[in-house]
Amino acid sequence: MTGGSTGVRCMLMRGGTSKGAYFLARDLPDDRAERDDLLLRIMGSPDPRQIDGIGGAHPLTSKVAVVSPSAGPPTDVDYLFLQVGVDAPTVSDRQNCGNLLAGVGPFAVERGLVPAAGQQTRVRIRMLNTGGIATAAFSTPGGTVRYAGDTAIDGVPGTASAVVLDFAAGTSVPLLLTGNVRDVFGGIPVTCVDNGMPVVVVAASSLGRTGYEPVAELEGDAALGERVRVLRLEAGKAMGLGDVSDATVPKVSLVAAPVSGGTICTRTFIPVRVHQTIGVLGAVSVGTAILLDGAVGHDLAVPAAGPRLGIEHPGGITQVEVEVDAGAQPPRVLRSGVVRTARRLFDGTVYPR
Image 1: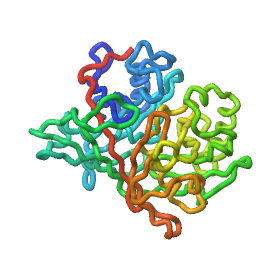
Image 2: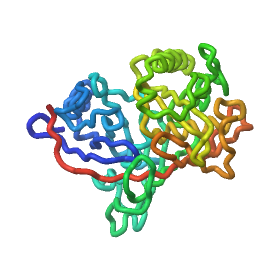
Image 3: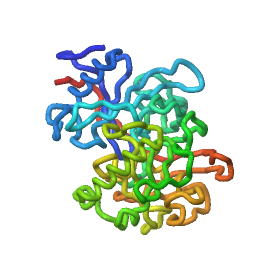
Image 4: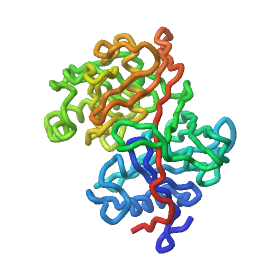
């Protein structure tokens, strides 16, 4: 590992609707405290503007992916996601990030951890935050990663090459973290689900909102923010996550009937700011919840003809695919996946504060 005036090797990538710094694990300190201190200085935290670092002054652009070779089958690489605080000196590994996950496969090829395989390369990724496994498939014509393409995702201008993410079913984390399809906290019905991301699904109407409000309106509603905070704290304890007052999970996703041709409409607190779109794994988890009879949002959703679900959000629609054995006790996920894009923004040396 190198640091200080010599800098650290880093690749900045857009993954899905997020942006983050990608590092090889061997280029960062082994000691967690030293690593976190270095990342805070690299990102420019704590500072609302992150003016003295490469962070983008928003939780969606203050993210880090740490990638290393896997110890052995069935995966090729290990991926650790770290959420770096913007105006607080925090580095959290308590959640995963499916958007940055979209860039892990291409990054692994760029760094020589996985060889490109013909026209398309498949990289099997162990997500260290959750223990789950994902496979990323992307275009590698001529043995190089193809970033330009014709795939568009809502929340990102222009088009890029597709990265198809498939998530292996069956992790050590139960799908329904409280053991119930529906719970009631403070008189508010919720469904607590985790298909890659712990999410509290609540009908927007239960909080006196439509679920179609602009992001700025929701963020400026102090009374709503306090109700969401109290609800999240109580749900977090019931979900076995302990005191989540300083944690980034669970997310709270307000749901309403779709209005733009999707399956369900969402507004997601992450946990204080409101997402400009929706996280990949958050979308998968919400999509999973609404497939369960009796779950919050099930009665609001438009039934889908197949496994593909359109999760509406402030920036458009995220398409996910979820198949659930709802008859099993407890319900069991058979398969889930999503199409994202990723693009390398720069590759070089970053100099920490």
